[in-house]
Image 1: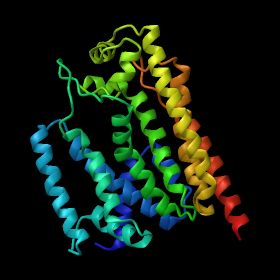
Image 2 (image 1 turned 90 degrees about the vertical axis):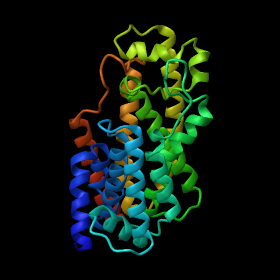
Image 3 (image 1 turned 120 degrees about the vertical axis):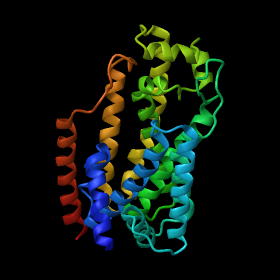
Length: 302
């Protein structure tokens, strides 16, 4: 398999699975778009191994270990017929992405396979926001740190801003997915935040089963939403530090995710009655604006 064929296979995966991300990929120059598709496909593969509930946790751990062993062989210079490995290795070399960052990326996707504290009812939790921040860093901020190496930047402060942008995105995901996660026995809302509003983790599970959301529960979710909104300030500050040919892509991605957070806010914290989504027409409109921005930036940069 050629490198070009490997990238094309990764693009097919991204087009099928990436949803919000793929809209942003569309406004990048081709070589950067290829790289983003490769990284996404790599993450998707790890996520699928970690989340496939048709296998036991132990089986998933063994499958993840085998996959990582194969990946480390490629990192060490070994040959591979795996399109994702071929494309990601080429992306690493082309954009100077360290092994350490990719290792952290995999660590993040595999976190749900690791034992976490549980309450008496078996609900997996985080004790406080610091623990949640570490989780968000591994599953989202590391992705941001990889992405800005593909986008290109020259100001060292971009690293911290990319980290905080990842926190904004993951907190948005957590708010959107509260119901689905609770149904899987996972409550990503930190226990200290729940306690502040007089809520127990098992109450979140009850809400996921159709309970009526109370004012204190709405207030708790709104507070976490406000914290997420604060981190979007870092995303907007990151934009001008990114290479001109990539700013539109980041703008599209931030705009879609921030739009999702705003829609959650308009639900007054009720993320249980229905899953909140950004309509396709809104995403297409943001993509059109992003394409216009990319064209303008390309002309301006000449």
